[in-house]
Amino acid sequence: MKFVDEATIEVIAGKGGNGAASFRREKFIPKGGPDGGDGGRGGSIYAVADRNINTLVDYRFARLHRAKNGENGRGSDQYGAAAPDITLRVPVGTTVFDADTGEQLFDLDQHNQKVTLAAGGQGGMGNLHFKSSTNRAPRQFTYGKEGEQRRLRFELKVLADVGLLGMPNAGKSTLIARVSNAKPKIADYPFTTLHPNLGVVRTSPSHSFVIADIPGLIEGASEGAGLGHLFLRHLSRTRVLLHLVDVSSPDPELDPVEKAAHDIRAITEELRLYDEALFNKPRWLVLNKLDMLANATDVTERLCKELGYTGPVFAISALTGEGTQDLIWKLQEWLDAERERANIEADKASGTYVAEDPRFDESRESP
Image 1 (tube, one colour):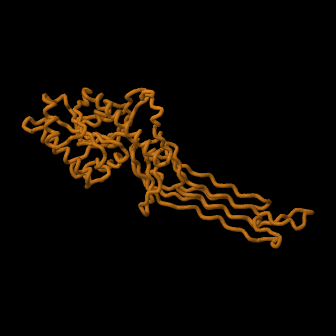
Image 2: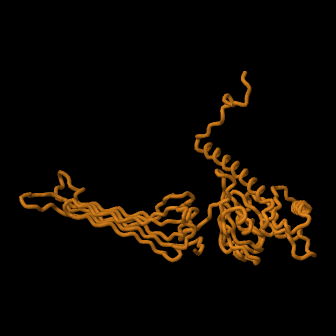
Image 3: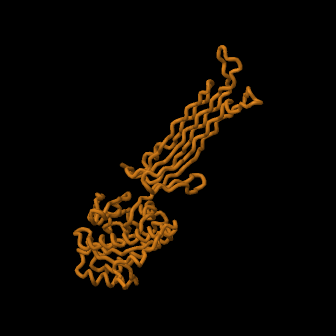
């Protein structure tokens, strides 16, 4: 299935049915009075997040979605039927924007989350509602209201805990295939990855996290060079970024440390130019293709000194699996701590957080 992460559509909700102006006319029942029913509600258009969908390709071709109008009211107290609603199923992580103003309307980041894209018009009232002791034969009725009409832009940002970034052929696809259930295309030429890949990394029966791989970045990506800039938005929801760096050097005269330092600075600058929030995300340095180095420890120390880098750094070989287990365990530990911190912050914001009472701390000795 073709991966599509952006689509523009038009949604038109149904018009409400008109109310009826009618009078009861039956044999032997003089002055039957008003009996005009209300019009039916027009169909609404909803969007529902579905975790079983991973692309917006359906909306690349089906651009117009129009709901039916509600039925008009009739005599004999008959109300018009409401029109059926339309439900558009989109991937979890879809953001909905107003295509004309650019305003963000909804962010569907949970499974089965449902939002109203265009509300159907209310049906008009029949003359049944206008009767009174002083107006026994009302001829008033109201027309149904028009449904909402909008031009919308769907933008998909995949939901992942960990994002991989780096130059083409840095080994991102090999790593995600090694540690997760993803099966990306792997080849020995640049830009093998043409769309984001998601994989689930399971560290235990009850612990796992999602990792995302996007096409490799090159210098000038923030200005449109290469493919990576098209998919950088998919890293915006991640909690931590793994900056994968190829520390091997096919040219024996080229210092691998200088080459790796140049690549790291280039990618870091592209992140800063693209989005300051993405640039400020936690970022771990992962030195890949360890199996092609004779002095991996020396290269790691020299590279960190060259960059002045003091954060987490891992030396791995995605091809052989060396060092990958330690990396995913540290990631799981860090993500668990982050989730716990986020839950505490959410509880504090909602006023439901209760700190542990030291009187019930079992580790304390009894007086």
